[in-house]
Image (cartoon, rainbow, N blue to C red; front, top):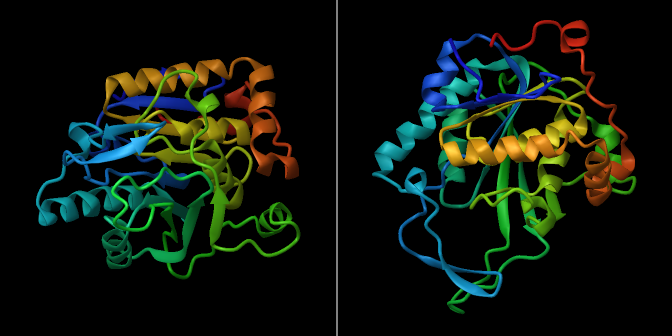
Length: 290
């Protein structure tokens, strides 16, 4: 029986401390959307530049790479497990850089997914390139794919058009990197900005939908889901990051803070998500089986 590390009082936010490879096969629940920010396997002793300082890029043991074959098998395994947990009309978003995104795209096709878009996240405030020998890294990529080639998926076209000032939303999103206010409870080395996850969730889910993040980290996906009125399951194998997720979600027990966060994220100017109802049993049914 899976034991949640933390479950919010409204039962709309759950963190499980464990390895996704172990946790996902233990239940049959299916999700409307998955967001995955898998290891890029770049912790190789290199250096980068952050907040005016030269820093080591090593993130932790979980990001240390193996052979190309072992990395490919790692990605194939979690993509297979995630596909089993998607509803037939569900979609998956996968974040990456040129180091891993092309291999993942090939695996998606191999496993039967249908790639819908490859979003280019153009960071409006990228760190400088300290070597001065090539262009500054200012973009990341997010693949958006659905489970089946011919089963329609959710896409909130009119909302995305409104956010883009009345024009069709393109696959290039100019959004800032993580802001200082998003680190109030602590810091994760690969934390994504709430503005990015908010747009992803608003684009491809409806109110009360269930979202899975198999590499939850500090649960930015879950915090964005809470702000958008969606429900969330995150799986995280690092105990410290599980506690970080807990602290971030507990902050949002303060309704005033939710209001403040929404004001800081530009996409919320076009939508006012209803508060997730506290009575999960009455409004949503049984939900997760644990």
